[in-house]
Length: 55
Image (cartoon, rainbow, N blue to C red):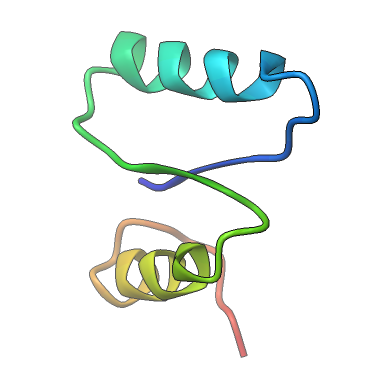
């Protein structure tokens, strides 16, 4: 799982980090503005961690 957030104030960043903690995953979280987010999403899809396909 990869957490993605968009936050001007930091609220969604805080929420996604809390969600990942509660979900019990040691998963990374990235701002949607970070280019490395795409790399991690693709890697998660290829590893079968996501049912969403990116074409």
